[in-house]
Length: 197
Image 1 (tube, rainbow, N blue to C red):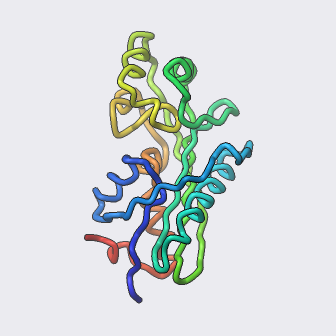
Image 2: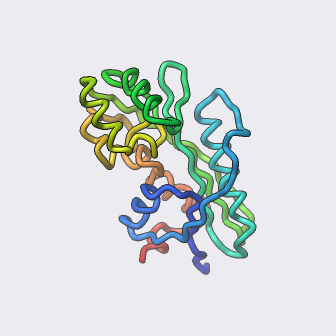
Image 3: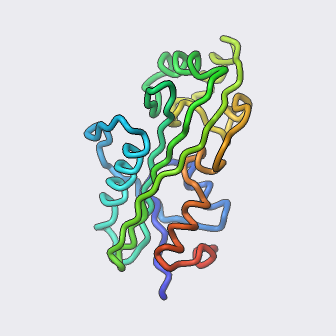
């Protein structure tokens, strides 16, 4: 089987770096899909739906490719959190998160354009946050990192200081579960090693 190019339908530098770290050099084609038009109260369904729309938006640009769409949210106390709108929202969010735990959901949609097949799955990882002083919260938000991330933290950045532990897939918290991607590729009859460069 001819190995198609791997396309990442996401502007997330964290997802791109994650794939590059494990030998996959994706073609990056961020989706221009308007996420605000999707309103679902169940986090797993929300991230799967958004991931699928992102991948579908990019797919028509390719005759042969594997298109990966992803979306992440943090679910906590029955609320769903994406990226905070501004610094004040990020500070308020961390005042709730510190000393607490939440579930990080990532939706994964993989479209094989040539085979005309689509797989959509989600992964969840429980994240336990450290007790934090107001000073630490203000300093962390001042780095700008929380404004770029679902859940207002990056486990691969400054945010790693404030994550006590996780239960589940580590890379899912970065925005793309590598074990889940391997399973999805196998379901489409590829081997992950085919995409190593």
